[in-house]
Every structure is written in C-alpha cells, then in structure tokens.
Image 1 (cartoon, one colour):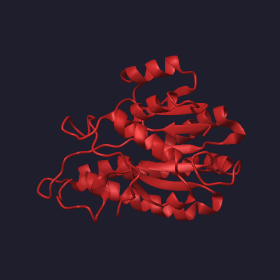
Image 2 (tube, one colour; image 1 turned 45 degrees about the horizontal axis):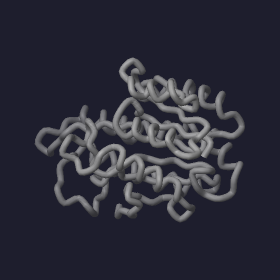
Image 3 (cartoon, helix red, strand yellow; image 1 turned 90 degrees about the horizontal axis):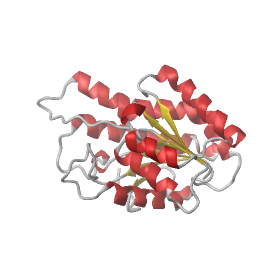
Length: 244
C-alpha cells in the first residue's frame, strides 16, 4: 500500500502500528497518524522525525466539523492516488456495570468508538474510491477500511457480561463494518473488524496477555494477507475468524 491513515496514534496500539509500518522492508510512502495533542505525543514525534513518510495530524476527532481539514491535508499528499487504508483505531473504555452505567457514559463511548469511525469513513470515501480505481484485486494495496474492534464485541463469546458502554460500542462498530463491506464492494473497497487481543496498554491494563509489539506485528501480517473473501469479517490479530 502506498498510503494509510491511522487514528489515535499518541500511544498504545496506534503508536505501535506506526512503528511496525516504518520498520517494514517496503513501508508505505505516506503514513498519516492522528493524535489529539501533539505536545503529549513524544514517541510519535520521535518516529516522525526519523521517518519522512510519517505525517502527524493533530485533531480532536470529536469535532466532526473539522474532518474537511484532515481530508485536505491527506489529499494534498496523495493526490489522484487516493488513500489506500483508513484504520479507525482511536477508542475509549469506561468501566460500567448495569448498576452504575449512565446515559452520558454510554453516549461518550458510542461517540468515540462507533459514531466517529462511521463519520470519518464517510468523509474519506472520495479518497478511498480514488485508490480503489487504481487496482482490481481486493486488499490493502487497493482500498480498505479497518475498524478496530475487540473480542468483547462478540455476542457469541460473551460469557462474562458487564462492560456495557465499551462492549455495546464495539458490537455496534462490528455491525457498521459488515454494512460497509456490503455497501462498498461495488467500489472495490473492503472493510473488516479487527480484534487486537487483550493488550498491555493504558486501556488493556498491565495484566493483559500480550504486549503492543506482539499485537501490532501480527495485525500488520493479517492486513498484508487480506483478500476479497475477508471483507466483512471479524478477524483476530492471530488471523482467526471470530463469531459475531
């Protein structure tokens, strides 16, 4: 792929994905990494300083009125080649039980984890369509939308309950991903939901089973193996297809 935009890159999985991409034998020509506050994205800035193909875009994605600014910055760099991959990674998790869940909490988590990825995808459609026209085979070298999900989004695998705001928001983005895969197939754009595993990040906590490098390196391997048959699927970092 020539270009990719990843949201939420100041730390955790987003930062890890950028690091993995720049270390590839043939890294993307353009890596766009968004963050809310560049002054707090020290490690991301270090990567960008060492790699000219990494461009940081500072923006609060909650402000959907500013999406035209992101589009303009990316379009200026990619031109008629369009954008190959939109990776909706940014997310939040607020612990909730049925006894303490609040309307404001549900709304906040839904905004970040579900609404923003859908609206950002809508905004990037023109550039994704441009990229899709350049090739015929489905995959990240053509045009793809990757929505970061979670194993807790699986209704089938839910044996523990709880996590109302986070679980519901990630199940919702899974539903949106499936619709995207159907609606955008005619344009040659694929869409998948990705489970990164239980990762040792600020969100996942120190007791998580895998580190960021393990998760993100496997995610990149999965992305590079995607074919048309994978569009509309819910895939774990290991490559395993998960039940909805």
